[in-house]
Image (cartoon, rainbow, N blue to C red; front, top):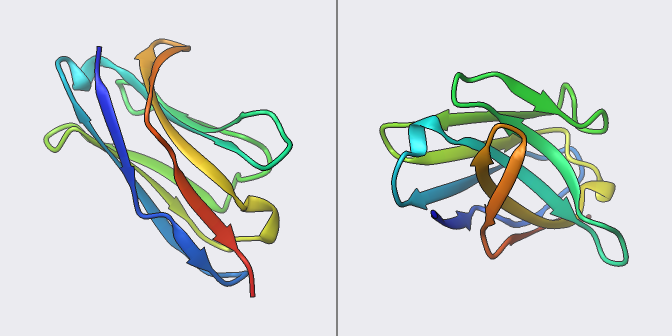
Length: 116
């Protein structure tokens, strides 16, 4: 099991950029899959991006070309670089960890608000 702590959320204007970080404690970070999900008010939690232990990434269509997921195994940290932000990106963003495509550990979430 791993504990995940997100940071970097906040208020940003449309078109702006923001970088989320997720620090993981526990064992075997480098061989875990990592990911970001988000949940907007009144909506279901949805996948944003995932990255495998080998560095292969996957993105939701809605964020392709705007968001970039990366990981630093030396720091046990995964990042989500978000650019060209839109109001519809407003949500609570959750970091998740697991094995393959199965994610079992979740952070507490960080709020991202895109508004002028």
